[in-house]
Amino acid sequence: MAHALQHITSYIAINSKLIYTLALFKYSSKNNMGSLDNNTILPINPVMMKPPTKEEDDEACLYAMLLSSFQVFPAILNAAIELNVFEIMAESGGRRGSGGFLSVPEIASRLPASHPELHDRLDRMLRVLACFKVVDCTTRVVAGDGGEVERVYSLTLAGSYFLQNQSESLAAFSNLTCHPATVKVWLNMKEAILDGGVDLFNKVHGISMWKHMEKDTKLNQTFNKAMAGISAIQMRKYLEVYDGFEGVSTLVDVAGGVGQSLKMIISKYPNIKKGINYDLPQVIEHASPYPGIEHIGGNMYESVPEGDAIMVKATCHNWSDEKCVVLLKNCHKAIPQNGKVIIFDMIMPEEPESSVAAQYVSITDNTMFIQAGGKERSEKQFEKLCKDSGFSSFRVVSRALSIYGVIEFYK
Image (tube, helix red, strand yellow):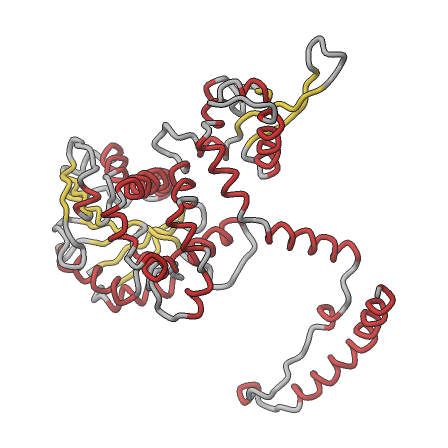
């Protein structure tokens, strides 16, 4: 078998130049590049035809193996969150920069269970989290135990984002990703590809995600908490690069959730005399009172409250172009002639990239299959939404984390 594979590999290597030459000949026979038809063979990069080196193949093989089991990591991360592992580390000084590390027995002593395999299983979980830089790991000598060493762990900066009792937390987002109702949708991902325009959540559960959350109060609370946590992170990053709230007196946040973003904005910009947090009634009922903010329940596809400026954050990506145009036209009606609509949303790179930022926005784009029409958009696609909604001008003002864009639409 090995000999046969070697023979095939050698055959490919010997003939790669011939294949490329033939392809190039047929390609160059076309005088006009614009006249290429479907039968034209384009030049093949001969480098791509070379057999991989052993090192290249080994790396590709390991990477493919990792991807094939990648769905396990969210479960491990979520289990650590539910077990309060990160809180245990933080409360005991095991936070990056504090110099404090905790051993597995020290962490295990704070868990609500005890059995012979607990230390081993917890250590194996922490090892995975260390490999992905969610926790730090080092070793230390166990005192009075014959020089035996043990692994000890502390929380990294990335891991600190999964602490639950803080406004800027991704813990609930992990809970949402691993919720049975959500997981069931991901297991049917291919249906989103094969069935055009399908609302995947509706197809799997027989009801839209929004209607489902009206009935499932626990899921609704998890969703709202997840959105509040990630919204706080996003808003802090946005406020570091955007100062367009100066001079605004009345600010409306459409689909503002429980009002987390408005609170952060108003606390930084006292010139805003009134903030209106506008969302669905079942969302608004969980919003807490806050000075300077009025919570209003309603349907953004029917109308939008009036304001000097209207912000639409992380909302357009939930909906189709047609739905977005309806929403944005309502926003257009609700602002004065010198007003503006501020879009806070991801901006999709025009071409795929391998950076962490590009990977994240591309994955998020695919999560939008959960409901019909949802997607992340490129700068050009946002510009088209602007024109189709009746606005006269469009400007990308700034970016946070390279992928979160701040876009202003003007009448």
